[in-house]
Length: 257
Ligand SMILES: NC(=O)c1ccc[n+]([C@@H]2O[C@H](COP(=O)([O-])OP(=O)(O)OC[C@H]3O[C@@H](n4cnc5c(N)ncnc54)[C@H](O)[C@@H]3O)[C@@H](O)[C@H]2O)c1
Image (cartoon, rainbow, N blue to C red; front, side, top):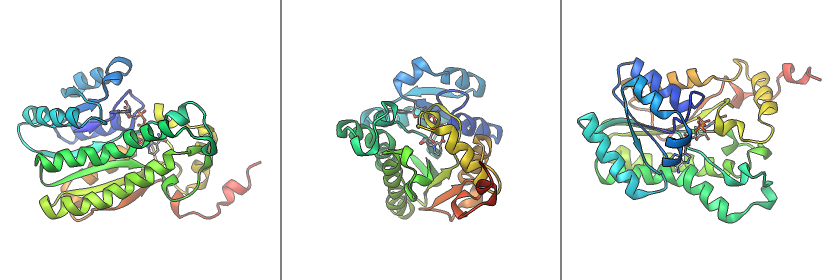
C-alpha cells in the first residue's frame, strides 16, 4: 500500500514505481481532493495498481481502504508507505510565532496523527502480514531548527515518536517493523511549499558530502526497508540525506559568497 502519490514529483510516486519494478503488487491511495487535482490515476494505470480514495484523517475511510486493499491484493499487506504532509500555516505564510492553532490541529492531524490512525486500523483489523514493514517519511527539522520549516518540525517530531511507540506494539504482536526515513529536501509539491525552499535545498546540497539524496534513491531505500533484508530494523529514524545529518562545517558552504 502506498499513500501519497500526487504527481510525478511525489516521493511516493517513485516508491510505487520502484516497488512494482521489484515485482511487488500494490494498491495506491490518496485523499479524495488529490484524485481530482493530481495524476494518481495515470500512475495506477501504468503500474496496474488499484487506486482507492481515502482521507487519512478518517478512521472510517482507512478501515474500508485496508479492507478493499486486502481484497484486491488477495491477502494481508506486506508493506505500507505513509507519505503524507500538509500545513495550512505554511501554505498561508504564517510565521512560527504567529501560528493559527486551529490550523495547527489540522497539520498535526494530517501530517502525524494520520500515521498513528493508520497503524491503529492495521493493528486492530490484523491487516498486516507477519514480518511486514511500515514506513513514513520525515525531515531533520524534527531534531534541529530550520525556522522556515515552521510547525512541520513539530509534526515530524511527533511522527517519529509514533514510529517508536507503535513499533513496539507491532513488533511484539506480528514482528512488523515500523521506521521513518528522514529524507533530504526534495522538489515536490509539499517540499516546494516551504518558504525559502530553493535556498535550503542548495544549502543542504552543498553541506552534504554526497549531495542531496534524490527521490529515486529514496524509493530504492524504501524498497530495501520493505524487503526481507532489513527484518531486524525497527523503531528507527533512518537518515537518507547524503551525510547532511552528521556534518558540522563544510568548507564548500563557507567558501560560497
Ligand atoms: N519534499 C521534501 O523536501 C521532503 C523532505 C523530507 C520529507 N518529506 C516528506 O515526504 C512526504 C511526501 O511528501 P512529498 O514531498 O512527496 O510531497 P507531495 O505533495 O507529493 O505528497 C504529500 C501527499 O500528502 C497527501 N495528503 C495530504 N492530505 C492528505 C489527507 N488528508 N489524506 C491523505 N493524503 C493526504 C497529498 O495528497 C500528497 O499526495 C511528506 O511526509 C513530506 O513531509 C518531504
